[in-house]
Length: 256
Image (cartoon, rainbow, N blue to C red; front, side, top):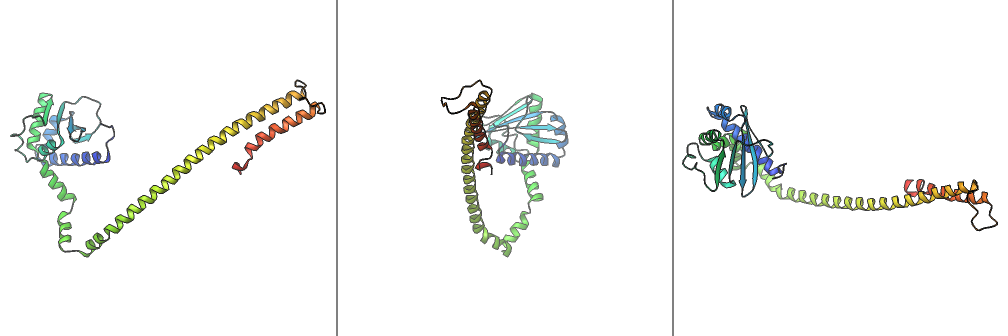
């Protein structure tokens, strides 16, 4: 599994972590269970779909993470559906179905496994879920507004298709703009590569011309097969050509 969870996995882990700590806080034996499992890491491996995460237990609560460098004291393996089913069973009803099967297995340190099985059969995650929804989501008020046909809700529902259409159109427009920007960036990069090659060639030839002009002026280079041209004139011509090539790349149109 990837080291960084996807947004969906991050949401699932965050919700499950809240529910687990809620269930422990609601139960009289919650603190004692945390103390018994403190310092232990529980590796949970689900499949269909595949999902691996770790329960890191300390005296203050449980943290869920997809990364853990140490060894897991307890390893839980099962199908995602079976794990969810067992987690939501009412307290006291897991003992009958607590034996390991092909879809649910728990192994590791015997004492820690026994403590975990007792905790699974004691704490009611379903009750924690109901409490969390009751405290954080005002469902009765929402249902009451819908039953009363509140005009504000009706107006929002009527405008919803139009708002969705506007959002989709804006997404399409943003995608077209991004595509245009990418094409412009590719064109600019190609142009810069061509300009760079021209710069290197012009500067190299310009430096060579200046070097030949200096050699001519010092008498180390003969006049090029034109009897009427003096050495001084040849030196000036080579120097002028070299400077023109170099300056053309520095003060050309692209830099103005």
